[in-house]
Length: 241
Image (cartoon, rainbow, N blue to C red; front, side, top):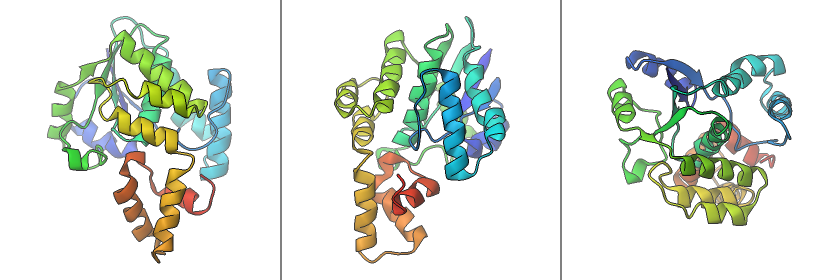
């Protein structure tokens, strides 16, 4: 069985139109932001539901149905299943992918990375946003299988990120692999996440730019590696992230 984990709802319609067969799951999380504590998966998901309720007014019951259920499904993947992780290159997507790899490390499924390989160096942080059905089919054809070492690396990156262990993130990110393009840049962003984004927003505002749309676009230009969306940039402006 093919199982596809899409990076968000924005990709659902074009994926459905692509003709790629298999079960579709959607990662509706932003693990780069907020509480990621919890000694068990249940505790972790309860903490995430609470955070999402406070930060984004996401009802905990709705979180369980639309978000947690997608992650729990991954744990059901079995021998002979092929799980395709459709994640972009930047930190926002990378953290979500690391978490999925941590979950999938407990299964015996075959796991593949499907990346926006059609993007050039200049646009590497743009992701699947403008992808066509042809782009998606091409990316799927070029998918790369995670080795057991790759899966362990992803799980280790997730644990280091959870612990805010900048030194460990730096060490792990030195492991360049085909399944982790731009890992050095992303790892550096993960290590600097607690300070650098807020500094960049402050610099932009200090230059007299006060329209949110302009601030957002300038932040994306200067710090696209973080992959932050509207909500994260607004939280930075408010001093919450």
